[in-house]
Length: 550
Image (tube, rainbow, N blue to C red; front, side, top):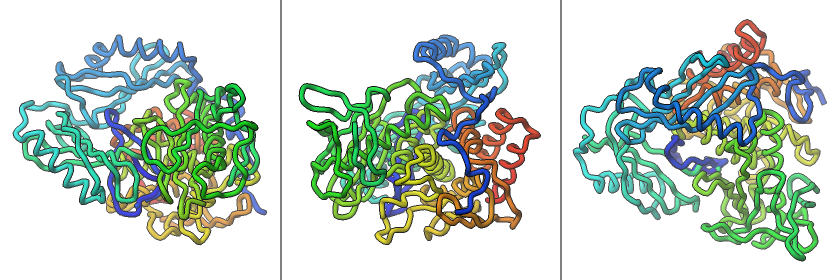
């Protein structure tokens, strides 16, 4: 789980075999690129764009891939002890299929061993994208340290990172391939609470031969509704007797629950006798339904954004809705996505009157779930920054898609929730360093920053790719985006930038993708969608150069 922001520096990761989630924070003049339709989709379908699969068709593709997993493993040159487990499948309009696999070695999960096989309509393998290029070979599967020692070290790491109220539930043997030569290791998950009240799911990877800590990552990533941030909106509800329940049957039966200040459990399904939810004003009452209306609206708009922009049906692309929980804890100034419950959770902010349920926050949190169920970007270092940036990018896409006059689209993150107490946004995409901590450009030390700050490089890239450099005003907000090399960048528009980022995320990025690899992934995506000599391809290259990624 990763919160929307972190008050203290923490490292986290989201790998295929682990719980993954995300949170929002760390403890006049418009350009032609901005004048787009709310749906932000191209008029003509692209051959390399993902096609919408029915539940039955997706299940068939997944089963076919799993049935042929042994042959695929042999075909791509994996060893006799290695097996593939299908995680996801994407089919393009031209018939190309991208199958994402997890890997095991001698029956043990290989963390950082995920890969994607790209298959043409003819059935020919066009290529393989691997999280690690190292061969998975481990001389001995007999650990030299005990599981108890690994567990003890994990608890110590949790306390160091600000998780005093911690508990560990054993350690499991894995193969760690996330960095360097693959080795036998233990993975320990530490539960409890972080110091700011966010649930704790700290994963600690320990070398089973030396006892050295190899890695650590946080698994918690971030009817009529009278909302606080988006005005009066239409929500779907289900009538049960004389009451209406906040269940969206049109979007995978997404439900909204009230935790009423608790920090565990599902809570109580939000219901009303009038089919009107909320008052449109903030209230410190734990039974207030305004936050629930905002959460339900945000979930609906996020679902529609992914469906109408990319043909994706829900977070897992299986037509199943997640659920939302509001009124988490007491004056909890954060929000988070948690894969273990497949749910979004929102605190009520300072004084319990500033709930973190704005539209871009909802889109941000649900997008952590999409990342977890596609690339699984490790929530630490540069891949962690890319994970956070993906949520900021897609949350921004949701806000523009909704086209809500009460919360117009912008390239500011969390501008409505007043986290800083002075009305300023949480993050700025045009010049990330304006928040006081985020990186505008890549450097060799950017991976040492908290992921909410290292995300600045990709956020800046996306803004430049969408809108270009220099001064401009979009939806009443003034921007002035600089470049590392001083060269001007011309944007290609959000619609195309979103298509490129999504395709890169779902078909070319893996758990270990760093900024250099993200450049390659987005160039591959631009080439597949628009051609390797296209304006779009050249713009992607120019935008990465402008943030010092080459």
